[in-house]
Length: 308
Image (cartoon, rainbow, N blue to C red):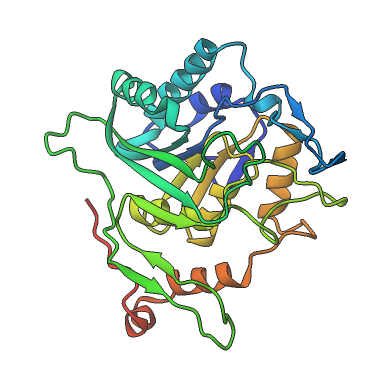
């Protein structure tokens, strides 16, 4: 068993990935930089007064590359180094922006992956469109692929088919909560990361601008791994994938280069962040998803799995 199990390593992912034992992990789940940062700040005025606080389009140094070509080269190296760590026909999930889907699909095939599907995340509460010059960005995309070991059936190593069910919330405790839908559509709806799950500093400032909510990570982990399986996130940021894996009783291996993100992610997983905790909604979802099989079956048979 790996010495990195259930840890986040403070290292550059390109340095760290070769250290992982071959064919160790069941799946990799990456929220990589999107290369969208532009060093611009906007100030909006209405009737001679500022209508909004100054708005910057820069995400941070982690999202900056010298050129688009350098960005593609980095993604190619990341995916190439990830491939040996996956078990045969293991799964890869890769968040990306829409403009790069075709490029990344081509890269996956050249490296040795088998592209399977595009999953669309519709954000129920997207960031405001301040400019009003284009449609509001309310979707993100996730590519699903397999390590391609020339299996003629292209069968995933693990693929737990989930029935179309819903976890509904008691109105006495959750009077306005929409149900958590469980289905196998290539489309999912969920809110962006909000408090109390959103990680902030003592002054209330958001640490990472693109922190993924745990709720959006639950389904791929349930589908492409089993309990005690190993999930890899070599670009783990605030540790959301690691947290989701831990909650679903999986093992995880994380890597984060940024010292600040690494510090917060480590404290998060060790429950040492005073302003961070799981929402009551998420706690209820996890309780139902991890219930003992007999009890779970009595509720509504929430998950029926099979190994591919």
